Image (cartoon, helix red, strand yellow):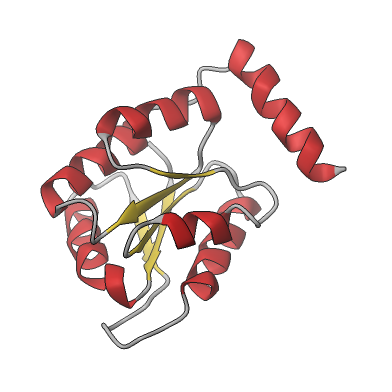
Length: 149
């Protein structure tokens, strides 16, 4: 598991973020830092996606979790941060494969798309899996090379 998990949401994801944060706080080997929002008052999701992305990009051993209504906006914004590979997941298997094959370091969830039980399963799958490397490393390297040109 990662040493630090950065978590944030917009107003639509606030309730689910709080449930995930509570769930993760029961795992002693995780440090969870909540970067907001702190209510269901309307906010702009890119602000939170960029902040989580920048924190994760400073130490790529860390991971991020972002939640908005669909997960799409957070994912699009987070992927603008150099070094971030955000994946919007709606199933456990997607989270597993995002980590194993795509070296995803930020998980995006849609609070209006999935229920909290499924969200917990997706989070657990994302956190317990790691990058397999090998042929996948070559492919991820091509993405990074393109982004950096």
